[in-house]
Image (cartoon, rainbow, N blue to C red; front, top):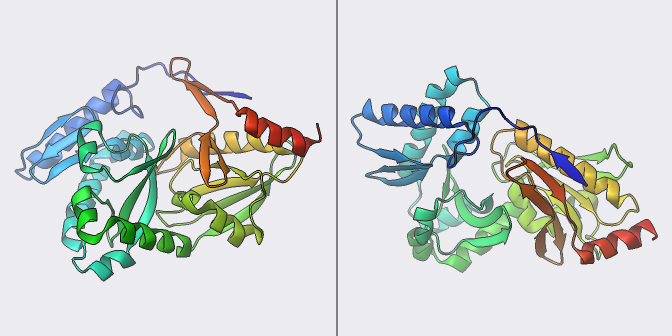
Length: 304
């Protein structure tokens, strides 16, 4: 079960890995110019912007730029920082208002720069490539909460409210037949910023979408971008086809859609998440390597 990405001709930037070195340098220059035009002194290096208001990560901005023509980049930079600057003014002060717009959220495990992690000690690793954080859904942007804000409201209160809000967040879904062996795949999607984050409550999502509890073996799932959650309950003999189809579909959506999250395939089992993907950065390829426990489930379903 092996999949390949084509090798690019230009070297990729070591910090903003979605872009080539030249593209990343151009983006950093646009960020400096944007602030200089407004009389704001900043330092931009690697994937980090430092200014008086604090430190920001350029990773998501780079992903948006990768999907746009370079002539559109100045506008993307302006809109990005306008949203960030507006977030401070729209963040509620009242605890009840905060809890009403709090969500558990899946973010990439490198979304918070290493130099800033000391301010986000509450976040929890989910699996390779994925981290659970808390965010506020604000009128103009989504704000990831730091330790100081979390301490003011209370971590457990925020997590409980974030989980309830995540479950209640409306989405759409399609039932698909995988092209390899006709396995049943579920594609959850929508305009919400938290569709992929519903993988954190996959048992609840599966119950709402399929009308049944997840089977004993759990489910395969992918969260390729913030607007998609793909999953397959492990209840059919066509499980090998589901592995291939979900992996291929997830990679394609990750490459083509805004808000990319993870190209990896995962296994949800009794509330635990296992990464099934092995990525070779030098070859720019990845393969699916199920652990023996999952292989036993697959063999049982296939009747072998």
